Amino acid sequence: MKDLSDKVALVTGGARDIGRAVSLKLAAQGAAVAINYYDNPDEAAATVKTIEEAGGKAVAIQGDMTKSADAERFVAEAQKAFGKKVHILINVAGGLVGRKTLQEMDEAFWDFVIGLNLKSVFLVTKAVVPHMVDGGVIVNFSSQAARDGGGPGASSYSAAKAGVLNFTRSMAKELGPRKIRVNAVSPGMINTTFHNTFTKPEVRQRVASMTPLGREGEASEVAELVAFLASGQSSFVNGESVEINGGIFFA
Image (cartoon, rainbow, N blue to C red; front, side, top):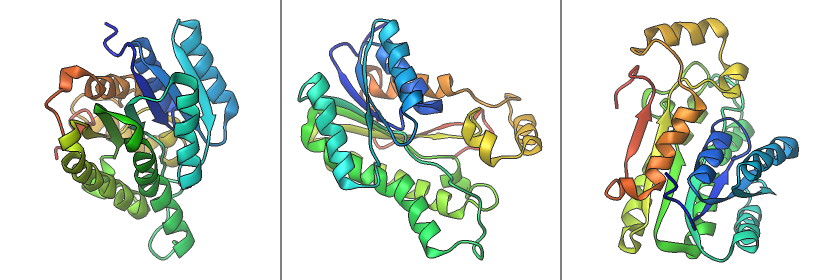
């Protein structure tokens, strides 16, 4: 069912993994999708091509979402492509960067991780909201790590993602009078390059075996949840964080 027809959606980090799955899903439901990417134009172009070949509309826009000028340019370029109205914002951009203990971390590393995962959400939201229609939707990406502290060496990441949760709740209250709903999703172990890079195979296997459903999640399953939150089917869901982790952790 295409219930996002005539909507314009902006997706940060929308070129690969979960962001790509979200971009594809929103486009399949009828939205015109502006995809932000940082350093991989080939992945961004491939995502746009896939959407267009399926009959959808998409454009890829490079930018560093930890910079206010780039966030504002992202919005301006999306408007140039699809018109002035913005209906949906999905803040996916983020990452662990590296696993470092307290003693291994320096101030620059802490600031970078917080900037990538929390400051970016603030800057993009600030840039988008003046152009968002009343009744629009924002979906932010937090993490299971925001609730349980994450794995070894993930303190800066988990702290940033916890900040995303409370920023989501604050914005749900602040933007509620404009009927803009703001929610978050908090993935657990999802089969992406994130865990290919930062999580040992034996750890992934152990976590999967401990999960009640006995497996990792897939990016497409997260995208289905995001599409629900972006649609009118979730019209009274606001300020919520939806855990998607197969039942291994309950908030």
